[in-house]
Length: 251
View (spheres, rainbow, N blue to C red):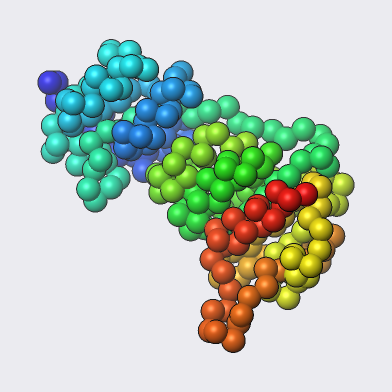
């Protein structure tokens, strides 16, 4: 068992921050399940794997060269892990190629996330998009980073399966031919209308909702009806995403 060098520990720790993920073109994932999925679906993406439990080595070697796996001490794992209780497996991975949408996405079904800053919400929405088979998830510039470890954990690997790209709303409106729908409590009851065959549904910021600048440009504003008299003023954005995706599937 070779100890990790101070330089290596420092580099892995730096990947907790977006600017260093971009600088080194790397990100990290933690946990046996997500690491196994990654090695099966994107084997060339995994550069090195650190484990503090030797029992995991045989499991990981089913899809990964033993040369890429290093057993380290629990103390070293705590030094490089981003979690309070490290799961015992940490993989350093190469960033995937950037995704660019085609010039015409009028036949696609996609979400546009407007300033979704909570990593847990973003990760859950990506998992929902993966489950329901959406073609894309588009992000505004001020969304959380999809390679944030909390996003990756919440998405359970979906962040690396779904086509995700950052795009400004004006470009997106042109690409989709104006078929964009915003979500708001003051919109049209989705259960009293037929879902569109395609288009982009905009999900807004956790506190502020969809920005007014976007709402004024969309084709229609949609709402999920609820019993506001019971006290809840709105749904969590990830919960709303699941309802919209399930409703959309009926189209």
